[in-house]
Amino acid sequence: MKTFLKKSGLLCLLLLLTCWSTGCVSSSAVEDLFTLPQPPIEYTGLLQITDKLIADGYEYASPTGGQNIQSMQMEDLDGDGKPEAIAFFRKPNDEKPLKIMVFSEQDDVYSLLCTIESSGTAVDRIDYEDMNDDGKLDLVVGWKISTDVQTVAVYSVGKEPTLLVRSSYTRYSIQDMDDNGIPSLLVFRANSEGISMAEFYGWRKDAMELAYRCSLSSTMAELSSGSIVHGKTENGNQAVYVTGVNEQGIAVTDILVSQENGALTNAALSGRTGRSDIAFPYRQLSPQDINGDERVEIPAPVIEEGSNKKNDGIVQWMSYNSNGKEKKVATTYHCLTSGWYFHVPEEWEEHLTTSVTESDLNENRVVMQLDGDPVLAIYTITGENRENKALRGNRVVLKRQAATVYAGELLEGAAAWGVDEELLRSEFNLIVKSWVA
Image 1 (cartoon, rainbow, N blue to C red):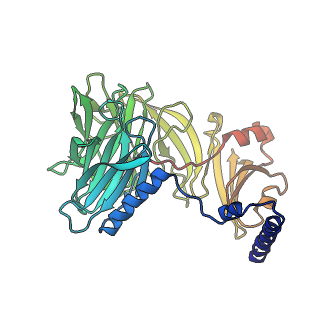
Image 2: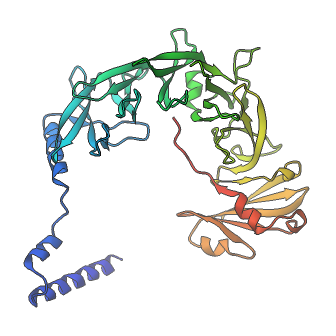
Image 3: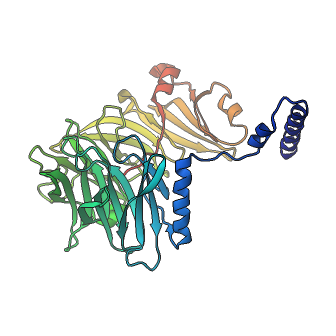
């Protein structure tokens, strides 16, 4: 390959020199071909500013978590169509070493608009949201003060940044909880007595204030192994699904629902125990919209007798309304080890069993049986010969990824149960990892 590239490069150079000697290419064009592309002039000035900061002892300090982790981020904060540049620095030995510098552009020139400073060791996370309904994006910043202390702060950006609210937190989430078009801040933390709390901060009467708080069923340590998912309940209320995983491997979920009066209630709370009754074995699955109805369902894995695949198997999906009433809305076979799942038709549920076969030939097979009759097999195939293996015999390709091919096959019992290729394709899905708060 290297030899080919070298020969190709020499050939291009010879052709270029030939054209130049015959006058078909100007000398300036040749110089342009060997010149690296230059950034726009406004970005050149911005780079010069940041280079000077580095020379003065600053160092880049990118956010360590969340979706926005670049050391320099471009966001149109004021909605004028021109992106501001938000840079993250650390100045060692300063009283407040962490610096978030916002640069605005005017007439193709960037200049410093403001600096937000904090003590601590790192920026844990940053989000850009209009938290005060003024048409401009605010900065929601999680500051890591020490190993055990974190604070989240919301800043309105201007020549003098304004602090809208600050709170300690273990995790936080942003969502329009009360459906008024303005994002709210949901903070999860332990209070002074060690009780896990959810606190709901919203924009009220020209200020961002604590609107409501409620207790949670999981400790902060358990929550760190779980998830926080935004979505809607069965009857369409905005909600946050807060899941913690305890030492016994049980996922306990609270459903925080915003009421019309601004209160935040826990729809999962038991009047008898004061804790959530929604508790199922944990199999690396988070609440999600599994059936495309724009409502969030909670996974309830079925523990199969003799199963040696902790994260693979049949999962029932439960939907809850804002009063905590449940109903089953879907069943899947989830193969987390291979990255796929299969929607189980309702009429199969009392008849389905599965078996798994692994080989040393980069192939994994899951066979689904109905009343003992093999009806279909799903293959996960890797290795150099995966395309050929995926089409072996009666197999059909279901999905492709960079290094994996997923194939399916109808078995001898398929016809009796009305299983065809269309059903096989329509019910097969890849597991898509999504970012949760």
